[in-house]
Image (cartoon, rainbow, N blue to C red; front, side, top):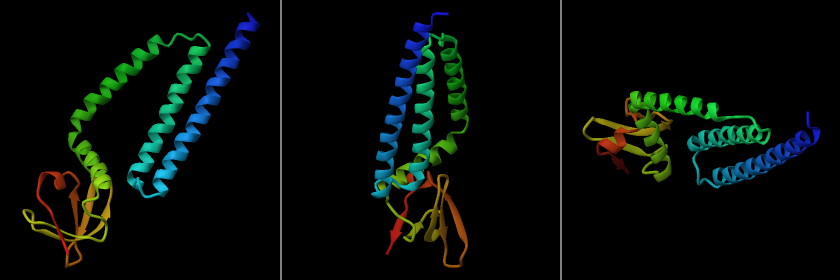
Length: 163
């Protein structure tokens, strides 16, 4: 075994890991700053932080394997196949994705917030917004009943903010 080549690869891998830690720290700091300044709702913060953390871990792992001259060509084929299957699965669950993307848009553009009174005239639903999550917005009517309205409804049908 060529110890010099191994040591060179190990130093390069350590540099990659160090750069990944620095990058992760900077990204985490920026995300925390956006979240604490109320520029990013909590509903977007956690999933984005998850994607950044594990995406960075995956990229770092692949770069470290590359530093040790490990052939990752088959791995890329495997990842491509898995991503293709995931894409097919996403098509099958379009309603779920529609509600998730609508939730992100509602949190970003903030046409209403928790505590506002809303009316969905075509559906006969009116009341106060008591909760919002990735799938539903909960509207409590005057009788105290909770109506779980899918988030994508706010982009498909008219709604009215009451004063």
